[in-house]
Length: 361
Ligand SMILES: O=C(O)CCC(=O)C(=O)O
Ligand SMILES: [Fe+2]
Image (cartoon, rainbow, N blue to C red; front, side, top):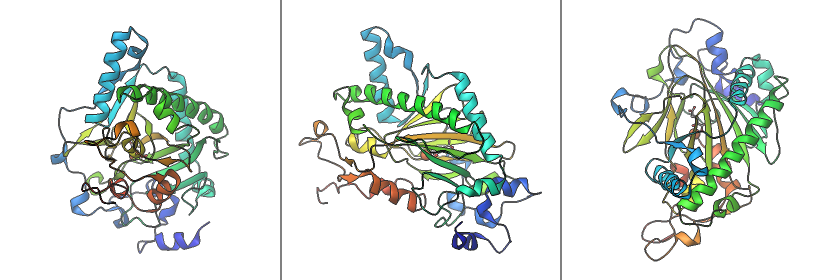
């Protein structure tokens, strides 16, 4: 266990934050948000920034298997969703409802384990194959996010905690299915960009998938803090599942749009490396999660990235005189380590690999 981290995160108020925010909430009557979690005034969620009546697009995947005209129409709509929103929900995706329910249940069981059991997986190495923690990166976060997490690699190798006993079996099946869904969507997204249908899949071939389980306990003062601060995701496509408690918000045209939980739908978002491959045509969009006073929220994200040693750069077919390359080539593993080692900072990581518009590197 990393004692240096534990020491630095024990606050003046005596809480041992590394045990997790769920532990903090479960262990007694918290009437207010401890100072460690209080966000500065200008980064707190505010109702005035919410775009009322807006919602992210819904993609019906069954249309992909219909007549050529309907398929073409569906692919065009998917491309528009990626370009204008960077986020959409998918329905009729073919993943069994029972598997979705079992996965949410297994996540709930993991977070319900004792903190001692969960802390077996606490690690300061941001790329440790199984990692339990709180906030985003407790070593560097100035204000803690109201969130505990479990992250584990799920592809090419499945690494899981030993507990709950059925976790490995359920997660193995769940992440296999969500990876298949991601690859299927990558095929359709390639087509929507006018690329060969296997172009993006080839870039992400032999890539990695990580299971990210988020637990956001109920919070006595939800307006003071944030479940997860604004950020964009690394990788190609993230497939996200949430329980029936809302909280996810997506940045769109300068406002935040709430994503209402919809049973059996997955939320999908274009992530940083797909924005790069598409040379900026498709957007990796900032999102955040707010918390509430009544109910705990669980979300399960599956980021699907390329291989760690894969160089990522804009597709040559999407680069020409009027569309110069907008991003430097980089190794995915390096990018991932940097993203995980810093605190959350909006789209800051992607900005750092952008080529200045005057063409200078
Ligand atoms: O909880 C959510 O809805 C979002 C989680 C998220 O953005 C992430 O894990 O990267
Ligand atoms: Fe995210």
